[in-house]
Each structure stands twice: as structure tokens, then as C-alpha cells.
Length: 285
Image (tube, rainbow, N blue to C red):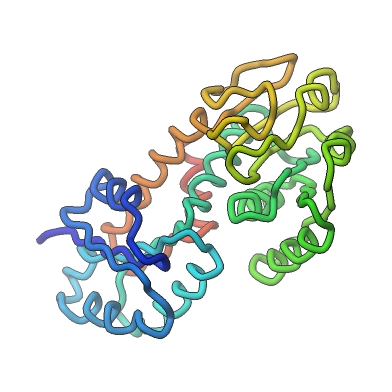
């Protein structure tokens, strides 16, 4: 029985990256569908849940991707509403790679020095990776501050997190480099998850800061988000701080993505969203 993975992508074209990882994760065939929405996905889900016997349904799985996490979550909700009884297949959501990226970064920070009771400042945190990392670290006992250039955007992101995950995150507007330097003054952990090629924190803001213990930068496009952190850093110590770069924890991100795909085919009733993906990441870090 072939293991079939159907990509349901909210963008026009199903992502090549997710196709490759689907095969590397153990799927025999990966079939991509772009432009998926809650209004047009039912026929695709019906085809997945009605074609194989109950014992064979575990060999069919769905992967929800695309560049928009909000659209992906709406699609996941629509997919799950089609399921009933044992007429269901396992499904994973990783829009924009945000769940696996955030889980890998958070797991590496936890394995490097722990996060419980620590103040974590996430710069450029209103994107999907920053928001997911904020949730994961808060649930591990960290005091998380989510930063954006505008206070209202930061507040809106924190409100959305509260609605979806039921956790409280502190919003903070940091429009200038000086604002961001002040934001990290008493932080033990600093994470940059901003747009590609945008430097969010100068070296001078962290290098001689005795409070900061760990730094993580999710940006792999120069200039990096945190000046002085290398994209290849894998727990390197720089000026007394443990540093993780995008490629450094990206190795775990890829391994995690592949592991989730493999687990989809173990049964037909699994859902891999932020919580489940993070739980697996903690066992792999």
C-alpha cells in the first residue's frame, strides 16, 4: 500500500520545499494542490477519506502549507469539519514553516540553558514564527515580550495568541534600534524573527549586556537579524552568550519536519499543529 501525502497549499502553487521534505519524510507519492481554501477543499478531503478501508486509511495523509498561517489555520479547521467517525486521515499544518521553525528554535534554547522563569524578548515577533515561539516558550514558564515596530500591531498579535492558545504575552512597540536596545536590557533570552534581510539588533546592544544568556536569530539572509550572530551558530558562545543561528537550529527544523511526516502514516487520526510539533521537537533536541 503506497503512502500518499496530499499537499493542500493556500498559495497558488504547492511549495517545492514541502514536496521535497514530504518525500524525505517517507511518503511514496506527494501530490500538490495549490489555491486551496475552506470553500473548495471539501472534494479533496472527501477523496482522501473515502477511498481506502479503515485499516488502510493511515497510508493517506494531508499537509497544509502556504505562506499565510492565518489562512492555513482556517483551512485546517475546514478540513477537520469534513472528518467524521473513522472517516478521517492524519493532517499536519506548517504554513510558512512556522511551526517547525519555532519549535526547533525553542527546543534548542531549552536544551542550551533552560527558559523557565527567564525573560524572553522576541524582536520582529508578530510574524508566524515569532508568535508560535512566544506560545511555546510561555507554556514552558518563560516571561515573553513580543515586539513589533508599532504597539498596536504587537497588541493585536498578542490578542490573537490569547484567543488561539489561551496564553498571555506582553506586547511592546519598538520602532527604532534604540527602542529595541532598551527592550533587551533586562532580558535573559533574545530571539529575532523579523523579515529577511532586516537587522533588528546591533551588536553593541547585547555584547556587553550581562543579563543576556542566549540569542537566537531565525534570519538566514544578510544582514542577519542580530548583528554578530552567525547563521551557522550551533550553540557557539559569543561574548558569554550562547548563540543559535538560522542554519544552526535549521538542522533540527528539517529533521523535525521529516519526523512529523513519518508519524502521519502511523495512524489515521493524528493532527500535528503547534502543540504536537513542539512536543516532538523537545524529544529530538
